[in-house]
Amino acid sequence: MLYINGEWIEPHSKKYYEVTNPATGELLAKVPHASKEDVDLAVSSAREAFDKGPWPKMNPRERGAILHRIGSLIEKHAEELALLESRNNGKTLKEAKRGDLPPAAEIFHYMAGWADKYTGETLPVSGPYLNYTLREPVGVVGAIVPWNYPLLIACWKLAPALAMGNTVVLKPSEQTPLTALRLAELLQEEADLPRGVINIVTGFGDTGAAISSHRGVDKVAFTGSVETARAILHASAESNLKRISLELGGKSPNIIFPDADFERATRAALWGVFANKGEVCSAGSRLFLHSEIYDRFLSHLLDKTRTLVVGDPLDPETDIGSLVSGEQLSRVEQYVSTGLKEGAQLLCGGSRVTTGAASKGFFYQPTIFGQVTQKMTIAREEIFGPVLSVIRFKTEEDLIAMVNDTPYGLVSALWTKDIERAHRMARQIDAGSVWINDYNCFDSASPFGGVKESGWGREMSHDALNEYTRVKSVWIHLG
Image (tube, rainbow, N blue to C red; front, side, top):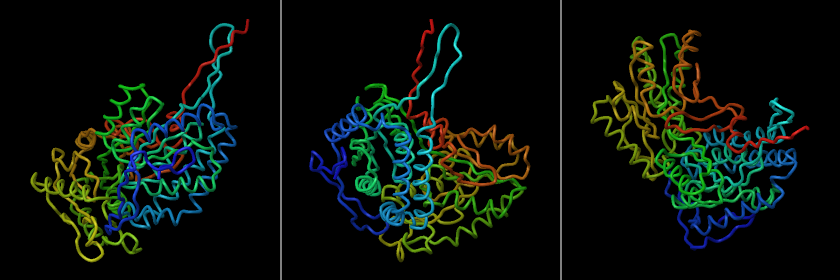
């Protein structure tokens, strides 16, 4: 069923598709394929709620209280939602419990606090005037989210949009819609959210395209591929020039200098690329090792990699679950094949897992390539799977040239005890985030987003609120 105007309704087309567990092939649900007519209905509901409903006009402190309530609901149902996420996406249950649910709840609590604090300014203009600005909600937001962190990324968009008084049409990935639908049930039952403020339509690319091109949508917030982002930009240009924020792919560098904390850097290199089976936009998929430590560090990393357990996502002993689909598995296989053809040295992994608990799903071994050069495909294109490319460097100058020689610029990390080098390189690396002596640092108070083909706009922090507000300048002549 589709969630529109606070109710569950059948799709106009009566078309449904199957959602399965990628680890087992088990049928989980049949989900509506929303048509253009369904999107029209959802946008109309969101528009009515924005233009005539109480939400945008509500005292911001009251909106904040509702957002706190949503965060608490996610915490209350965290076990259930984590299990659903694991079964729908293939990630391990322990990863869903640790990496998906706590930050999903936290972003609502954080944005709840901003609801009554994100203000305009009084400006000292020339002449006998009082000039001030108002921060107003954009209107109807279309939120289109991917399949790797389905609930978390949806919450990254919902929380700031709602905090500022917008209404939302949310489209989850066709592959992983179940936690979004369950969240809607919880909101309907316990959140006391006005009708039409959140609407959820499920479906494929044509459903997302209907949102992107809809003249009743004022802004699209998208996380996903560069190719889809280009289509959204075209749709905006050809419709109502709606605002867009984009969080796209990455080919992120993880840089290890000889003076790094060896053990911590090795663990970070391991989980920087193999967490969530490599289906992470911020994956540290390019590991740059200084020549002095290349062999020693790589040997230690290989030892740790070979201990990782691939298998049943619900087993607490499992480290790496199933890729999300057969299509994604084929993509990873093709990149590994290309790496071999172009001369990279396969050091471990490199094949599908088909034994034991992994026999029915889309499991792939954690894979490491050595002797990778910057010109190789596996060093330039996002694989979105458990594949690491290891690149040797000697000087900072050569390193920076290689690190920035990519169309992407999402995140980066460097490991050194030299404070001057750390700050110097942080300025030179072309990325939205630079982590020093750590990897995958996230907090609701810190902005996340990329440069170049990794997108524009920011998730989280007060910077995200810019994406969901517009500025109005008010002038008063004082006589």
